[in-house]
Length: 262
Image (cartoon, rainbow, N blue to C red):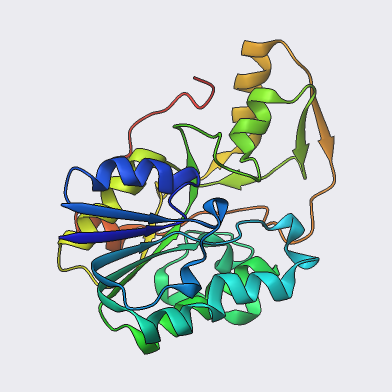
């Protein structure tokens, strides 16, 4: 069986390719980092496509709104038109739920709640996928951590906490729903090989205060924490309802404990 991974040299893509090689005869990789854009592909024939190729930034998305909309959403149209795809696996984002005060379920996403062009681009992409590729699996990811952060251009909070001096907390009271990268990759492989279709939240379903994680790193590294204003486009709270994913056997019923500073 043939699998294509777009964004294959990115943070999740790099790790996903390792998982995919255990399940597929041929794993093809494409990434703009290597000078190849998925939108330019023609006459491809794949049993499954893992589409991770995207510009992943919230903070910078306001200055790059048109670019994000094209890369993350509109370029899907020629890709679907010119290639044969068995099942399409798409990584979306919890950012499309906007500001949250409780765990959000899959049917609660609204265009008006998107706080950034990045979130808007993913929302539009989801609509294109539903219209053009019925056999799809859309994964709205929580905050992914663990593994090799090197391929990620815009650093995740945990890498900032591991590298910055001082550690900076924006807003101070942020809550995030974390899930380990290996659980994400395993869930995407299960979705590709199983019957699950539609939209699923992939996270732990539990909110973790970023301050707690920052304090873990601060104590281990002996560096101070400073506080800065909340950044435009970012939610103070992200918590996802993962009942649907648990019932489908995509993520563990009980999330494992993690020391985020390890």
